Image 1: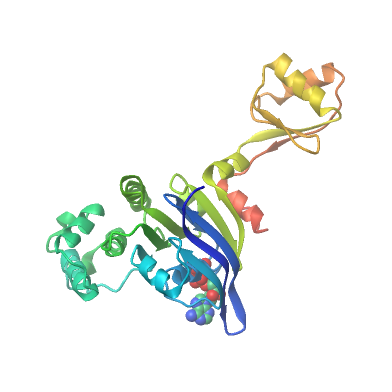
Image 2 (image 1 turned 180 degrees about the vertical axis):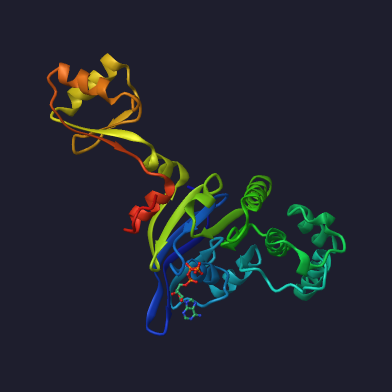
Length: 307
Ligand code: ATP
């Protein structure tokens, strides 16, 4: 069984009378990059803050590296690095000086830690450049370097890609992939734009109004979003045999209700219609289905489609 780095059970946060995180059961297996997706205000930051012990849950349980007791959790948190908004760096200090300040403040041994962290985020050659002159991308990367100084096994990142330009997004994404591949760092990353996490996340959790609506692997999501033709016929087993025998199709599935989802031959549906009708199979419906990731999420939360 996969080892889980973070598990939440019934995790809940209330502010005043308002429940902003509502009984969230989240599972993050070791080595995965978990994309937590939800609109602004959905509760992503609050979940991450609770996992990072920056906010106390109102109810529910957090299990971190198998630990659930206060003492165990405290030890587990030393294996966790978090970036919830850009930390407050000193504007007139350089990247190195800022990290050095935090290293001493946190009592982390070894000056090389700063150099290693800068290297990991490609900020070694910023020299005397002061933080206040950094681009947003550089600031984000310095924030990440700070989270990496403790050499965490788990990284919690709240909307780190937010506001970056397309080049900055690619750079940041590659950086996270590298950390994940090279050091097997498990990552929880939130975003309100699902496509930003594409080609990065290995699993997803969709959150809306504080509730975790669905949790699935990237492969499962891709499968759900795959373009297909959905055929409604009177005799699905016969139709399936015919698709295979006469049209040579192999990539399809027969759904429990008797419909067939066909993932090939999409360019010429008339051939399919002709073949089925030629064999006396009644075709009640033929629909082109599929959704991009963004549509999928919007459908899930019952929102409107754009574009
Ligand atoms: P965003 O990307 O906008 O930060 P989010 O998904 O991260 O969105 P949260 O920041 O977790 O959402 O906020 C969820 C809800 O909780 C919001 O309605 C927010 O106003 C509320 N909230 C967050 N922190 C507090 C707080 N300290 N006091 C009261 N309400 C809060």
